[in-house]
Image (cartoon, rainbow, N blue to C red; front, side, top):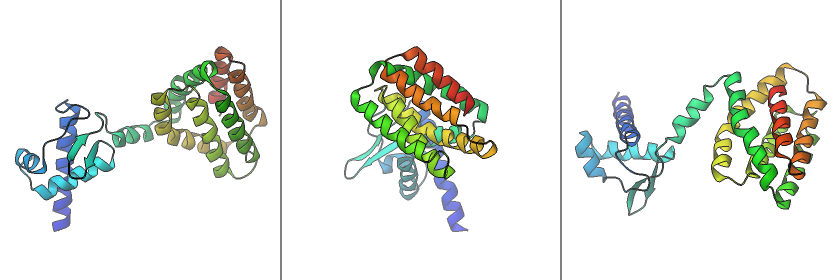
Length: 216
């Protein structure tokens, strides 16, 4: 019974702290009030504050620096963002891929380096080797290829957003490929996208990417 009550108090403290972050009470990079100060403000024990801060640190919202205090790492809770992503349906996932992935691939066609092309060819080769084999292994390889496509845009924000979103992409691929036979023509679109990127043709790369998203 005591453990349930303690967990409830920690959850309440976490929620109050998240609300303060959302309201803009602290700026990103700002040192947060000390545990005694937060305990006094929230009317709870220091132990509860400590546990709440551990939860926020685990979710990536807060950074705890040993001997220096806690700092606000992000104004957006990554854990809540992941939860929102996990609730999107197949059509919402497709819309998001069109906006995020296809546009990033267009940028990749303009910004790619020779090193990017080498990494993409390597990932596509691994992916192709598993296309007609184990589904889980193929999806893992395919995600590496798609992440490298986005990384070739050389925009860290886009890369990180896609890294968050890749779990939804994996779930979508698993659903679709489990309910329909794998089509070689659809897989071949990956190579055509890579060719368009190599030729620095952003319009063709984006068009092919949208076709792939619709078909996969």
